[in-house]
Length: 219
Image (tube, rainbow, N blue to C red):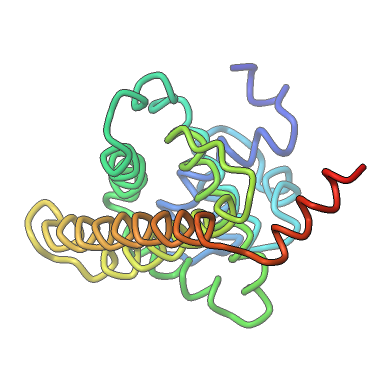
């Protein structure tokens, strides 16, 4: 990586994000947290503030982007591709949960910020982007409406798991792991049921489909 003083603002955001998350447990997602992170890297507080003009949501978005980037580097498609699909998803989500270890209070505060009405749309886009990254690493190539339903479902699963994580005091986060397993099982059952329904629909007689075939075959 280039020297800190040679990084773009976007690159600098990814560098500072983990330390900001560490400080956010005490200072919240605030300028104080940014200043503490900047000091760790020998960056002036004034420079660091320029990286996050949107305040708390910019800091949180950088933290999520850093986790996304670390996940993509640690678990490329060729590493998880030989696993069953449910194990691919489990490994990817678990990587993210492990990345949050020790940062539960920062996560709690981040979830509170993202739940504010003015931040909801951006929070939804961030969840979608993370879900998309996970599905791509899992080898999903769907381009039809399945592309959207899979990401919406995984995004909801991940968000629900985070809500369990912040209050989980069990050893090795056993409650969170069990919750994740149950939710993944539910998603897999849903996907199987959806596939059966689609096959049933494709195999059923359709007047409109018949008329369409007659129309084009007549040309």
